[in-house]
Length: 220
Image (cartoon, rainbow, N blue to C red; front, side, top):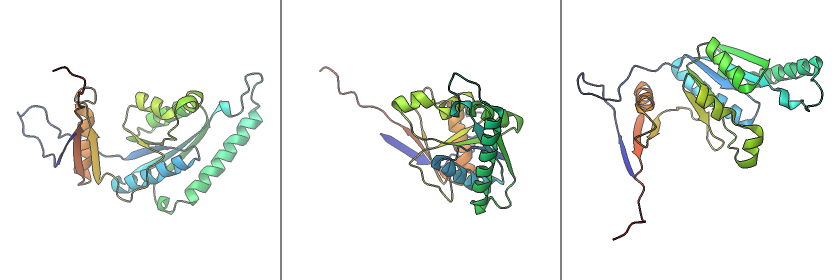
């Protein structure tokens, strides 16, 4: 393992491939809210990022049909309406419990829809620059049953997606140290440019990491 760290300087014309790119501005941040601890942590992370960029924050909650559907009878409109009202009330409580949201430009969306579809729609309509999602870290059968909203959004989103894992801690100053891991093949230059521009914007430390796996199975 060979870690290489340092400051990425601006590029000089004619020098070929480089990491310098245009400045990053996360002016509109979408946060997926499912009222879990992971979502609460994602919100705290989004707020910290928003304080750096002066961002507008969009809170999105999807009331999904699988909560009530049995596959044998339709869901009553009154049931859907009651669930939406309950979700809106929970959203108000979350906002009220976060003093750092005071003065932040904030929009909330609670709708009867699939989570991925609603996130995609709001992100497109509001021209979101960053999506922040909490990950439950599910695996195995649990992941097969529930599906992975995070993984699907990662594959389909037209903007960067930040995933806050279940073992993360809310940071007062995010991006002060960024690790960009690359296999030099599939990770691509664009991702490296994002990491470089982000670290430059916040005056953080950028570490580029490529791991060369040892090959023990060889013949003399």
